[in-house]
Length: 523
Image 1 (cartoon, helix red, strand yellow):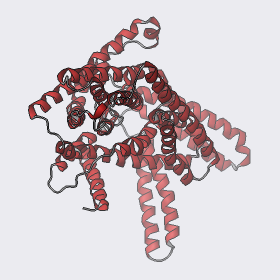
Image 2 (tube, rainbow, N blue to C red; image 1 turned 45 degrees about the vertical axis):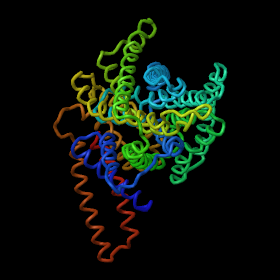
Image 3 (cartoon, helix red, strand yellow; image 1 turned 90 degrees about the vertical axis):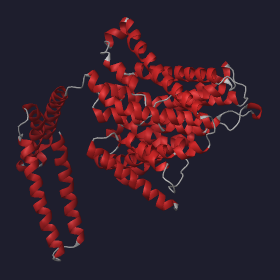
Image 4 (cartoon, rainbow, N blue to C red; image 1 turned 180 degrees about the vertical axis):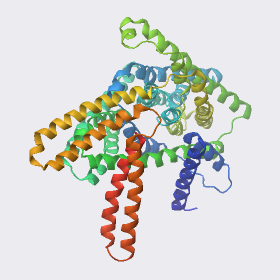
């Protein structure tokens, strides 16, 4: 099967599985992994090997960049304490726990190599947890903490992985060298990210063409990654810093047309890339099994122990991190202790993903002095943790959240806050209209005033109950009117009364209006 056909087949599988997942209410990431596992066992289906460099340099940067663009900086800053406790503290503890456990069970394997495995399985996936959390409607703060954790934990794990691998292959690693690597990785990543953010912001301000804005946005995460890698800084930290800054400043950097086009572009890219990533994770089963030669009972026992350690350490860390920190009066006043269901759900949302597999595949072939070690077994253990956490935790997380009755965000409260802000925004718009109204005719001013008042009233209408609001009726009827208009234009084109260009221009205007109606209907 040639490369083009393979790509078409994989993309088609992603689309088909996504459609079925939405149709039957399945969790798409988990469904794609399971389908990948099944396809890996189908005779004749291509064996696709996931290259670590492709994941860490080609796939991870744009996905992290988009996630950072969409992250609320105020919410990220407010939740920085729990985010760092998970993204740094928990990753270090998990690395040590898994490393020591595996070394105790396999005493012939050097501790450094076991710690490298611990770093491999330590970070939860940047995509899986938040995708599942949003799908089942977890509280906004829980989603923010999971997103923040996934933005930073890969950086911590990759630094630990490099240190452990360096020690395992015989490179001298002392406290000073470790501290130097941490400073270069974190400090260099922040510096590169800040410079990249300022440079990208400057170029965006000078650009008025939406196509160029989209091109710059696509180039940015790869450019930042390339610079960070060249100085051995953390590309993950650099991309996250750039994305957070640009996302926070986006309304002042781009035109509305550029922002709308960029949002649609990245939505399509992330949908397809994320889908392919989960499918490819499942497809690695054949490659992983091909090199596995350890006894079946040892493989099963070690898999269960490592999986239990990864899950158990997260639980043991989560409750003290949640409640012991609130023994400090300052923390308790600022952030009261949440219901016990919140840390429980956070503890169970530790699904691993493609970064774990990529770093496992980057394990060295031999250790110091050419020493052999069970590398294939380590790769399998990483794969088992990915599949185990995705399937076990991912499939049961919705039921657990329902059983624990995790407090959800109050949509009425959100709508009320939106209505109050919209009222102030409408007042500001009307005041500006009064200032500039003399430059237009009275009927234009009246139309603008009516549009502003209708927008303000539409938010308040949503607080009125389940009956059809005036805005909903407007949306329903206007959609029917647009369909009638489209039919007339198509008929005129078919009869040769107007050229294709006129139809395209008219359809674009009607499509833009219907997109706005869709937004009004969703609201």
